[in-house]
Image (cartoon, rainbow, N blue to C red; front, top):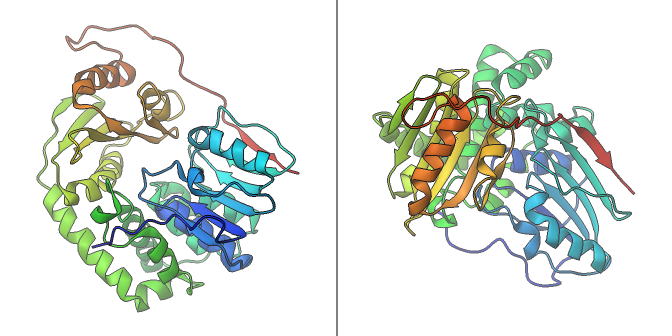
Length: 357
C-alpha cells in the first residue's frame, strides 16, 4: 500500500513544477513530454479525483509550470494567481474548459473531443516520438478504438496490443481512491518507476512494480465480478459499491468495463467513502448528445469530459436527487417511467484550440 506522504513540494523549493493527474493519462502524458524534453522539476500529483493541484504550486515570478490532464475550470483561480505572480505556464488538457482565457505567459493546448485524451495531445505535440505510451494512455482512458488504430498503424502485433491495453488499464486503476492510502503505489512514485523506460513493453517485462500492480488489479477485479446493478432500465444502469479500499480502487475499472460490455448504454458507479459521502463515476452512452460532464457539473465537485465524468464527493442525502437526474438525463423519463420530453440541449461544439505566448 502507499504511504500517506503528500506530493506537494516545499514552498519555493524548485524553479519548475510538473503538475499532473495521477491516472494513466496524466502519467503517460508527462512521461512522453519529459522523455522528449528532460527537465528537473518538482512533481505535484495525487489520486485521480485530486484535481485542484495548482493550489500546491507556490506563487513565484520566473517559475515554469507544466500542467497535464487536470481541469482548467477547477484550477482557474490558482492559474490566474500563478500568472499574475509572473509564472510561465504550459497547459495540456482535454476536459471541459469553459473558463479558458488567453494570457501572454500561458500556452493552453486543449481538445475536448470524445476521442481525445491528454497523452494524445502530447503525442501530437511530439510528432509521435513515444507513441506507444500515448496508446497505453488511450487504453487507460477507455479510448479502445483510437488506441487499437494507432497501435496497428505503429506496427504492433496482436499480443503487443493486448499488453499495452492491460498496462493502460492497470495504470489507470491505480489512481482510484479517496486518499493515497487506498492506492497500491503513489502516482509520483509510479511515474518515477516507469520513467526510465522508452518502451512500455520493456516496463511490462522488467518492472517489479508492474507485476505487483497487475496482481492487485486481478484480485480487486475478482471481488467486483459478482456486483449486481442497484438500478437498471433500458439504456442505463447504476451500481453501488461499499466503503472499502478495494471498491474505491476498482470503481473506474467497473465503469469502463460496463461501457465496453454494453456500448451505447450509460452507467453510474457510486462508491461509499469513509466520510459517508460517495464518489461517483459516470459514463455516457452518447457522448456527443449527452455529455457525461454536463450531468456531473450540476452537482458540487462534479466535472470531467464528454464520455467520462464524475462527482468527487456526493453527500449521502443527495443520492436520490442524483439518481433522478441521471435517469431523466440519459433516458428522458421520470422515476415512474413517464417520458419527460427532449429537455434542454446539452450539446456543445467540439473544440480544438491552442493559445500561446
